[in-house]
Length: 305
Image 1 (cartoon, rainbow, N blue to C red):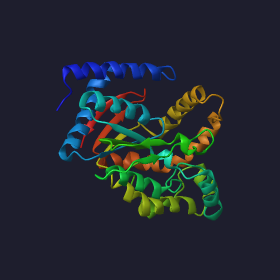
Image 2 (cartoon, helix red, strand yellow):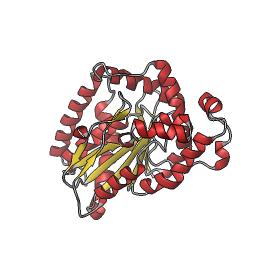
Image 3 (tube, rainbow, N blue to C red):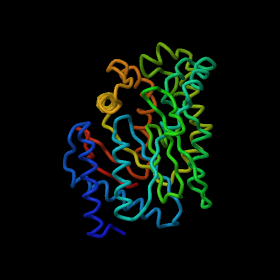
Image 4 (cartoon, one colour):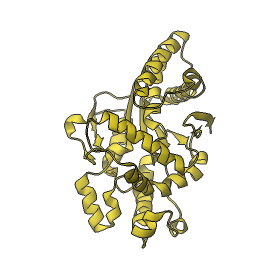
């Protein structure tokens, strides 16, 4: 089922209004209507078709490197699903389930100092995340609170800022840079991938623990995903470029809160490099939908597997 012409008009209006609000903080969007017709509407149709199979809450995983556009695309899909198909959508990020600063500090003392830095598997509260997705999928729905993480203070937000989900959504968009990633083989962990691993993870303690967490805890969470969408960046160097742009947005919207310098970002993304490169190799085959992003940060092609 595709949106009717009346619904298409409503989608288009809200979509253009949303893009305009985003352009205040970043580069202008190009070929807006072309992108809507070629990428966003087909994905909206795919999600609606998936929902209609059982009319149960569907978990849509949206994954891709930092700065690939996950938040923007999540919000566009929410508009399409509501205006086109009357489906209510809840969006949250794996980032919102980071462990508190205190918990990561303890982890950094017990296992490796590198675990103080949020990002990699092992730095999320997997029990809370699994319970949350499980509850959202249940037919007998109980209202739940979804946490929020404040990156400017590097800690979980107070409960007053959490998302209160009081009724069962039709669709959940679960986005995040490592959503759906599979573990690496032991032999892949041997050679350090960058300066950070070479200097600060000489005994492979940090990367081995990250991989162990992926095996033991994250696969259980990712198995709850009904459809996985992968935003494929051209290469890892664009993750750095687009992460800088993301920080620029954050500086404009965070009203004097602490943000990162370019050098800090360069060091920060080294924590993400190993798994991002691994994802570029494997997720083209393992995802239900693959969107290729070009070097100009535009959606280039789409493939439904």
